[in-house]
Image (cartoon, rainbow, N blue to C red):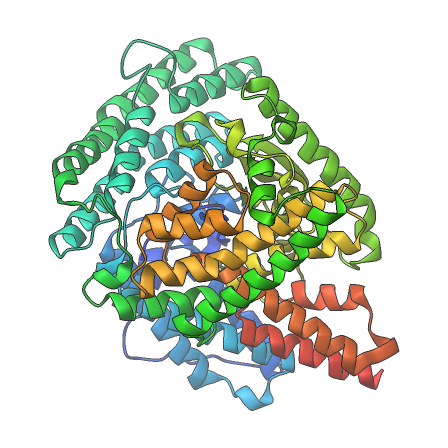
Length: 625
């Protein structure tokens, strides 16, 4: 399964870190660990201390599979490499997970571990199970698609996360420019194999991949015109190195030619191969998009995706019914605000008013885009003043708000977050798609800032990376949608408790985004398990939300190519709300909101079953204190 390479939310997520000590033995770690012999662990301390040390050692081995994760965490090890994205590499990682899990079970006694160490054991087993399950459905995966696919994520990663502070950093940057070409060829091969077996994303997705790939290889140095994004980044790095006295102008000229060669002779041909094949294969795609149930083994694949995204055993029917109930509940709250502002008309008419009235939009130009960013920053500055009353542990990392780079910006596409580094050397970034300001209404602006920033994704991700006292694979490990997106959606409502949304239209914007996530439960399951068409999904969305149609169609197309992902938000939020209600009831006057939030965020990204164990342990400890 092709994983998101750095964000996101969205959908690329920052993964995690490496000790240089083990980097030289990466290949051996990936291969020798696959033998049937289980290594013996010598333990001179308690089982808990020993297994925690073992977890950290194994985490370094796991990180060695991914140079991109190393960079995402601020390391400069394997700085000149791109991940191996072939199926063979994935299989090596699965075998590594199997071998290390067998080693864990052979050397440690679960019953002798502390409660926290037992949670770590459960998480290690969970990671192994995830890797195995993903491999079963490689043939059903859409390898390249419009939702921040790897073809755009790798260039974005290089621009935003590969720091160039020395000549060595620049030569590594250039090596990675060329390495993108290899990665693209690996992914193209997988896309071709899946297509041969009947798995293709719909035609609109092919069109997006073709267009985005063309944008990345247009302009200088590929042809006359304005500099391409990667060429502009290369030129900027070289100019800064000369200015800082790190290299001479003569050396800069040599490196510029190396960068040109990497882009023109290694990267661009691979993107052209993608464009050529996607163009040739385009007539074989579905012009009218279908859900994955239409694929071979599609129903089982969708069930797997629901389990992966929600970390529950909820069925598609159960999720669909939950969505219908939530849509009805939220409509009632929307009616109340409609009446509060004195609007005369029904809710459908109020939706049309919110979509069409110019007061709810900034100008559709660069100045309007900057207004959007400035307003988001203002809301985040306010909420930061309220955090200490609701959290004991606060993030150390900074947060910045940025517009998405032009080569991957899409009208109406969802905002997303990309984590910073554990040491704070690179801030977290909240990215906004601002190419069509009529798809970016003002009322939801405030709530989206809280979702992507504080107390949402930035807070959750930064606190996790900065955690001490738990194994690194949990603090800096992979992203689990039900937890991360559930927390971010819970944070939207939490912000209301913190004094946000003073303007009723802004509070309606909050309800709009919660409705958006409730609709997702209905629409995602409708598309992938009930045979809904794209238009049917769009119509249901518009009937129950004031979101602009451009945004709605972009959203529905996201659900089509990322089956199940959209269900994580509401399912995760509901579970966190249930756990809070349970804690409030059982603890009474002993309940401390800061303690609850620190508990939820204090174990890293976890499946909902593990989160429940964490909260139960906190309740028991608080009762006994």
